[in-house]
Length: 155
Image 1 (cartoon, rainbow, N blue to C red):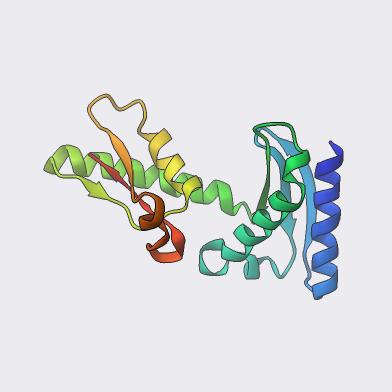
Image 2: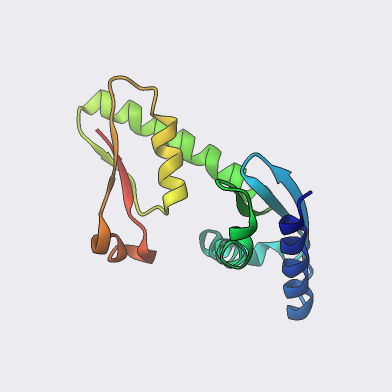
């Protein structure tokens, strides 16, 4: 395991200890870079409101330590396999949208999503020759959507 990943694990566990949470992060190397798997009886706190606290911790760690990772890698925080479960849900939603578009010949617009969720939708449908995907909202318009997120549509 690289040094940056070990630092991220230590920093996150220090935060959990300092806050009195029953949580423990374990660092693993993954294809994305450094995966911090978080377990403990307080893990539900990280997943409330769509995993916003989990996302916030991930953002802080990437801002603090991400520049020391090899290019293209990042720090990913996960609790209770939330990220993999969410990705599977998004892939299923993409397939449902594809069926709807083919049936109705009308665009399907998803609700607000962050960039990583939009990416899953786009990649899930990339091989579909008869469909196109696009993200809706650019520049300042993205910032006006809920939580600063934009949406994706299937055409």
